[in-house]
Amino acid sequence: MKRSKFTLLLSVILLLAFVSQGVLAQPKTKVKLVQVIPALSFAPTYVAMDKGLFAAEGIEISFQRVRGGAAGKAAISGGSAEFCACSGNDLLDMARNQIPALGVHGIATGMTMNIFVNKAFLRKLKKRGITPRSSLQKRILALKNAKMGVTSLGGAPDLYSRWLIGTVGLNPKKDITNIAIGIPPALRAAAMKGSIDGFFLSPPLAQQMELDGQGSILIYARDVAEFKEFVHEVLIVQTRLAEKNPRLVEKVVRAMARSNNFIQDRTAEASKLLQKRFARINPEVINKSVELMKHNFGRDGRMTETMWRNTIKVNLDWRIPDHGLNTKEGPWWTNKFIKGVR
Image (tube, rainbow, N blue to C red; front, side, top):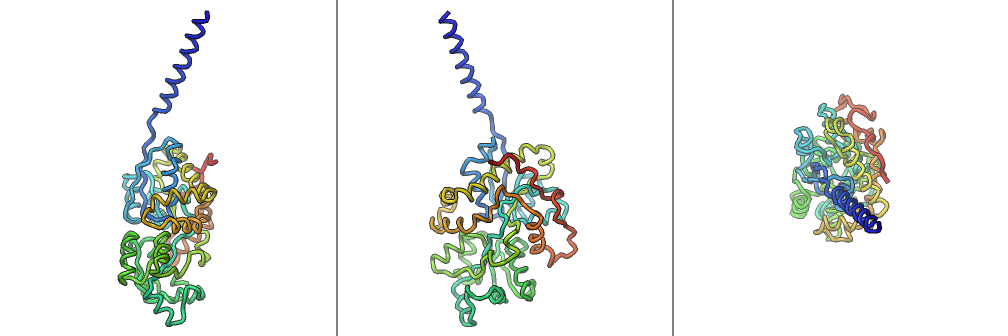
């Protein structure tokens, strides 16, 4: 009798071990995610991967950085990627052109880009009595006829800087020269060489160059009212995937939402993860940058009509007044996939 009980118990243990191994061995769902630029404004994407938040949802991410918003939009519209970590402007373009795409998570719901200028440009400004501590209006006006580097023409930095100078009466099309330079290392080289006067970009490049004495941030995004509630970076999904497999979208969005919250709640730990992604940048610069930006990674990545109203104002209203987009949740952006976030 005792042998029978022992045999039964052993069988149950072996069965449970077999089932457990079977569960652990279940393949993860593979998902392709592209991202348009390597910047800390996409910190939630990096943290979600490096902290294992996607893996915890049974998702295996195939990650690829592409060059600019045009490539990101092409990946979604062409079906080569299920998700894109893109700019809010990219989603607006897709919505305006009726490309089947849906914004499902606010990666950065506050502007993170700042305007950096090199030492030579600072010296010119000083002669005119303008410094990084001058009034916002004077600092914006100081950009007249400046040569600014951007990642791509028609991309977010290009449009945002043109809108900004328009707020003080300058001509967005004529009074600033934006030059397509590309990725951050190229922007740094161009600024140091003097090919450009500066650039409009998210941390950590400007902060590192400030530390190295190569220039200064002239305008912080936080100085501009419209940038405080603003969909700067957004997770975009193919509409057909959202309709066909909403559970998969929920899992990806939940991982991203937890990442936003992790950066806010455990900033120091998030900074350590990000230091590995930006290994060429001084760790202290990463720490300061993440601390500066963490409030822009909104709780759960939830978006609001106010955020989209400001995003449309900055991106579209001044250049395409008859764009036809409204800010109602549903057709091209939604919070409905943000579920079960702890």
